[in-house]
Length: 109
Length: 111
Image (tube, rainbow over all chains, first blue to last red; front, side):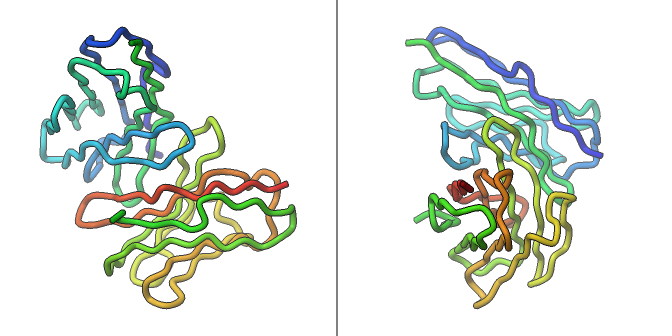
């Protein structure tokens, strides 16, 4: 049974810092991995999608990496801003999509 | 224009009542999902729906739940007799290629 774990559960950093969010999964037989952003009480916004054959994807200040064999992914956020404050969810897909519990990120102005 | 539109955005219902949550995927797709997120908990898989049939369902998706695509565009989740513990955000998603797109969710509050 696929389990997705995200560390840390919560993180507070001063504005401008670079940071890394971690995701691990137990079954490496995945088609892809997605990182989502969720604002409080809101829906899920897709940030980055990494196919199982890819090692990383970049979008603006975000960079996501995937090491499928070791069951790990990281989301790197450069030059963090207060608007980056949200919960970041990692999700892996085989047939269905399995989510981690998320990392609650707070960027201090 | 959003990829996936869900209505209503918030629904309050009395325990024991039936509710229907709606999802409009905009374009013509075959593969859909329903997920739920109880407040403060992780997003959980309920059911996947492929080519107008349920392809997989979780243990949460019991006889109280059903899904339909009644008119070829709307995609509905029905909860027959709601319980307090059904209070959650319900997300519809469609799969486009290899990527999943989620709606903004319906917040269901059972009182």
